[in-house]
Image (cartoon, rainbow, N blue to C red):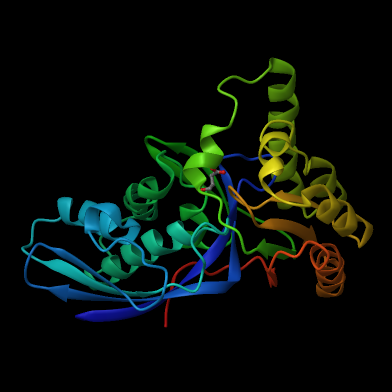
Amino acid sequence: MQEITVLSPATVANVVCGFDCLGFCLEEPNDLMTVRLVDKKTVKIKHLDDYNLPLEPEKNVAGKALLAVLERIEENIGFEVEITKRIMPGSGVGSSAASAAGAVVAANKLLGERFSQNELVELAMYGEMVASGAKHADNIAPCVLGGFTLVRSVEPMDVIQIDYPTLFATIIHPQIEIKTSYAREILPKEVPLKSAIRQWSDVGSLIAGLQKGDYDLIARSLQDFIIEPVRKKLIPSFDEVKTASMKAGALGGSISGAGPSIFMFSKDLETANQIKDAMNGVYSQTGIDFKIYVSPISSKGVVKQ
Ligand code: HSE
């Protein structure tokens, strides 16, 4: 096989209490990527969209991830990539992770599936670092593996797939851009022990709730004492969206990744659509353009088109 086209999905990272470690995969939106083998150790990027993303492989998330792949192989080969981004950069639903994970998973298929899942997540993380300036794989892991994931460690990479019951996410994407690097800069460097205890208790109970399919426990665990209070100031009408969503039956939710998207979980599609209406009601008043997606947690990560 010399060429492959893949769909690389959007993902939600952090999942309220799990900053930098929890994430899940969405059915849509997704990026379309074609990766081609060439007989020279180079990476060439072409964008078929209007986002004006960098084309130099070192500055491009897909390019950087593929350079990391080339460092791990001995053959004198390289990659050409065509990317149609349908996940807006800076949206908070894993746009950079989709580019990096899509490139690495596609390259791995062209190379005869030689990398393990942990290696794929690690290679794609080098691409993600171009966008966020930090080593985290909470969007990359669900994008590569699908479903719900916990990144226990990035050095060495150790990703765990978490069982989950039927869950729908309603995601509002205000059409403003928040740079992940900035959303990380403003975070506290130290956390009071009291907040840390509440946070890690919730991460543990969220995982237990997901594995048992206990919706009440999931709902009780969807709290964030550390990141949301700081970052929500970057998102117009965050509190109003959350309050209206909870009234419409949401189990809970928060900022998706570094924002500005906000996601809310529900047990069924009917409630997810009621939350959509509630979010619509709030954001229609703001004068800011927005899109709303409703998606189940998708068990599929990057797939061959
Ligand atoms: N965990 C990351 C953050 C996800 O919130 O900064 C966004 O890339």
